[in-house]
Length: 175
Image 1 (cartoon, rainbow, N blue to C red):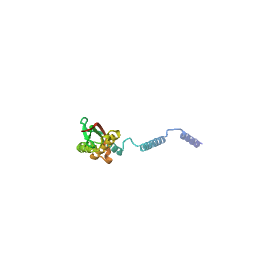
Image 2 (cartoon, rainbow, N blue to C red):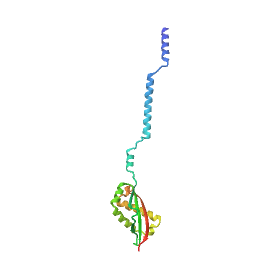
Image 3 (cartoon, rainbow, N blue to C red):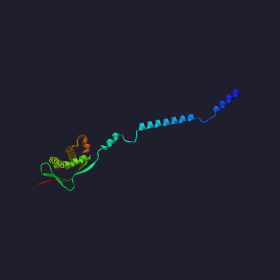
Image 4 (cartoon, helix red, strand yellow):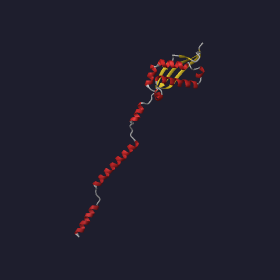
């Protein structure tokens, strides 16, 4: 009987709740691994907050807008129109360009642009520029003309002349 009593006492000791250090360590390790795995999966799935190299190049090469005054206000530049009897007087002609390179090319090729503008205006009649559709067409033609002279055509057009602004003072007859 003493053996039976010893066995029962050992069983009672084993059944007592106690601090199981090994179980605690295993739960901490598994918890840390699960948290790290979930964090890694979320970061991979959602991505990081730093831009990738392709986004950085897109930011660097994005077009900017620069104002270029070609015919300065108050200079009253005149151009002969078709037939030689009418003259257009332009008080201001400016461009919005998409790059410093285009601005530099406009200043280098000032004479060529003035000559091309003269050639453009000599093909126009005063009636063509007396309505908004004719003025819009004229602005598009000037934009295309300057872009062609400066070399900003095709894919590079977004870095060339983007918009044309003009102030036509008068269209008058010359006797």
